[in-house]
Amino acid sequence: MNTFNAASLINLLGFTVGIALYGLLLAMIVRHRRSRKAQSINLLLLTTSLLGLIWNIGELLIFIQKDFNTYKFSVFLVAVSYSALGFLPSVVVHSAQSEEKKARWLTLAAYALSSLAAVLHLHSAFFENNAPSDTALRTLTFGSLALITGLLIFNFRQTLEKKTIWASALLVFAVSALHLSGESEEKSWLVELVAHQSSLPLALAILYQNYRFAFADLFLKRAFSLILLAGVSLGLYVFIAAPLLHYHETHDRNDVNAISLLLTLWMATALVYPSLHRFAVWLVDKVVLHRVNYENTQIEIGREIETIESIEAILDEICRKLSVVLTAKTAIWTESYKPDAEAKYSPVVFTPNSAKIFIPTVETPLFCIKLSDFAGGRRLLSDEIEMLEAVSRLAARRIDVLRVSHERCEQEFREQEFAKLATEAQLSALRAQVNPHFLFNALTTIGYLIQTSPEKAFSTLMQLTKLLRGVLRSTGEFCTLGEEIKLIENYLDIEKTRFEERLTIKIEVPKELEKIRVPALILQPLVENAIKHGISENKNGGEVKISARLENENGEVFLELSVYDTGAGKTVKKSLNSGGVGLKNIQDRLHSYYGKTANLEIKRDSEKKTLSQIKLPVKGQIT
Image 1 (cartoon, rainbow, N blue to C red):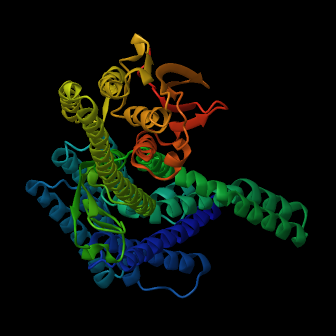
Image 2: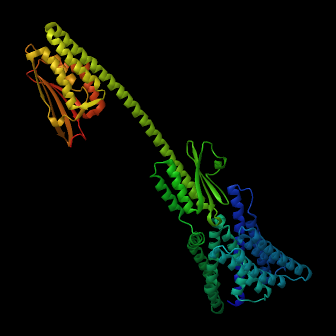
Image 3: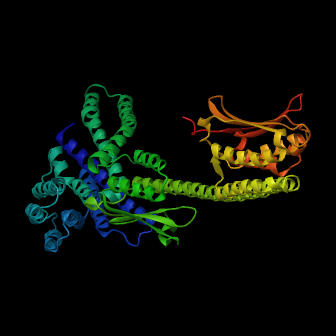
């Protein structure tokens, strides 16, 4: 393949790629506006795409005319094409400028320079029938070098990376304009690449400046993929196809072999494209934009908020995470009780330097996370928006779950409070039943003593007064076993006065068990039951024995309280099952305090002796 053919191939490929890139940029601008319902199109990007299209389409038509000797286009088309190329450096300068007012004149100077070059091109076309104008190209060359110097002065605070990008693009253009001003018919392919394809680095520099985060996902990945594909195609043609075709022309004239070779290379190009696209994606994400893996970020945020039980803490954590990932200086959340009109179309609404992420919870209050002051003029990309939308859904789902959980917990707490109040009321009622019941029996005994032994009545009445004072002084639901035994001893002293030698009392409660807390008046009804239904119904009387001991069942410690009497015991079962006050009271109280872990059991043996036993857990009271 000769030098002229290589240069022609470079131009053909370069202008085709240029048209594709700038056309893609224009399509993405329109698509971006429609998808986001923007009020206006970014004029700087629109100007860039139109200028690039005018230059590449015009040069492609001129190239075809020169190469195939077809209809000769007017020099006016050449002048317009070169004028469009001359305005691209001004767009680069415009996009690279800082916000300072004193630097705006440099942008005006750049547009003035491009306008002057355009006037020179058009003047040369109209009055000299020649284009492009060498004077205009030389003016652009030296003007571009001056612009580079001005940008370095007025953008001193910009990072070295940004300076390198736009300075390199302008330098390429300056060299291009210098070569174009002395263009000849035949040049090497490298010269053709530098001279005619300087619009490509200019476009990439413009996008990388302030708009890389707005269109990088939509444009740069496809652009780099297309450029890489064009490079691979060019390499395959220059280094493989051209030598083999040249050999074919000189040695073998079989056209089938030539066609087979071209088809093979086309298929190889198609097969390598997926790998080229993956490389372009990696290049944009990691090298150009320094982006994190948003899929992993989304998973990480979801995993973290699942462990947080506070809605406020969830929103704080999301703000912290997103501010780091998206380089936002400010990240705050707010709540409201009225849906935001902006959230009607999308949960993510963004402006040039801020973004709102609405949390679409089922119930109010609604939450909104606002990110602002993005570093480096950052804009949100498509997968960044998708990540934010996914995070908003994750947050909404987690907040809804917490709200339901909290409501359920609050409901259960209220139910427990109601149950507790009901239990306390029930226990108070049960206790109120015990006191009158006990008092009635005691007064009956005193009434009997008044009739049979008046001299003992007064002493017994004093004992009853002492007993009642102890009962009424204890307002708590629990007392120690020692206090309960003391109360029973006072009661039995009264009964002893009544039955005299017919009643024998034995109390076997170890001292170490007297500190165990038991429900108040839990034993007294059993002792009273033994006296009333056992001893009193036996003309010979009998013995009442009270004992306490510990039992260990399956690693759990229980306190066993026993009341044993040797009376007749004829009505014990009837009393337990008939719903009487005393024994039913014990059953209800044990169930309220301990559930199924405590029980009351009454047994009779063959000699009609009765044993009443209470078994209740004493966890935490025994060391």
